Image (cartoon, rainbow, N blue to C red; front, side, top):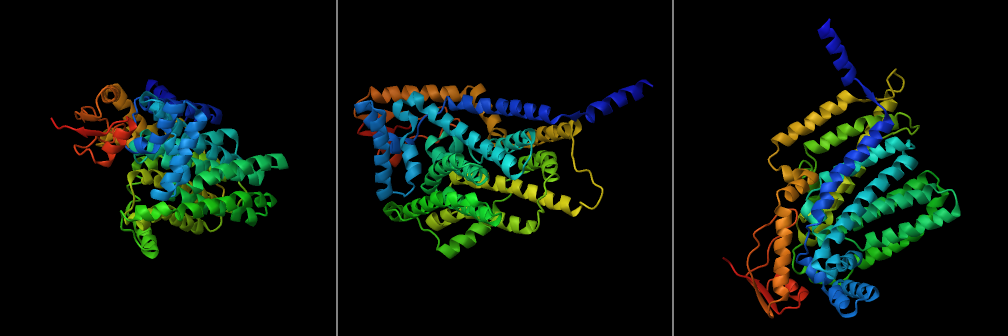
Length: 498
């Protein structure tokens, strides 16, 4: 009798059905807990190489005039210079030039935190807008969707070093992909707005983000244009009269795209690389898309897909949309995902740098969730004639076993700090490596300022991977050395080996 009582009690606990509101609240709390160590680690971030070069003019202007307007003009000037002598990504370079390190090395962290929070807010906004206007679901389901998707993109980021804590790389890729997410969100709002005032307002916001994307890195630049065209075609397909409002930001996007890809600086930069022909670049892009799919997904991505199943099922089961031809959606997804590699093969003849893979992975993850929704919707519609349960409850047992699966995988993976960004951030803060890195950097910076025109530096001792991109070279003519020397107003800086 006693054993039966215990068994019944255990069964009640495991089969306990959690309310959607409770689930949404727990999801928000859990996400905040995961976000805190990422913000904490950002407080130890320090500028490096490209930060020095692109923000140097802004720093000099600030030191001379102490004017925000003059600093903005200096940032615009840097974007113009780089447009003619390096690359056409004008909006990215403008943001690079506004690296908060120009106000002081100790203030560099605010730029990093800004990129992190901007990206988080952009992903969540996109999910909430899609949940409300496209999926027509309730607030709780929208929150669960937003938390799961945002958590997966941030936690499984391809490289937290390049994607979050190195401002120059993060603002060029992560931030600009965030602009794409906002552009899609505001474009959807234009399509579904009921009055002229809101349509004008969201059209202006769409225009701002469209211009930003058009002058961004070439992964975002191309993918955002393709997604924008898809939204417009969908608006036409479903006879949304408000689609006409999107013609203005589309025209400006095309102009910005043209200015970006035809910049004189692109030809100068191309001389340093041997890129593929356009046809080769496309072929190699599809090859890379399949080759690196496993590296860009993995077991943790599978867990997030599983976690989203109850939410997805409950949303699509109530939709009247037919979900016909899911194969076309998958084919579209494969093509869009593959475009992430195209610009790198065309310009450099390779699959791209780690910072580019950050946003390639962002796009892939969102496309996986899109396919999850569409294929489950198709499956439900196929089974509609049969007596199936149209709702999946949030059982404690489901989340318990999912959590245990997470722990099991975490136990066996060799690179724990590099696999989950929050754990990596926690690790570097609580081992003291992050603080030691920041202290030694600030001591080095103070030493440089108090030294003569030619400065000798000893090698860095503390190099936490998330925060440290490397060290200066023994050769003072090395580009990183030259940029650091300009940053601190010195003739030369070089490393002396122990």
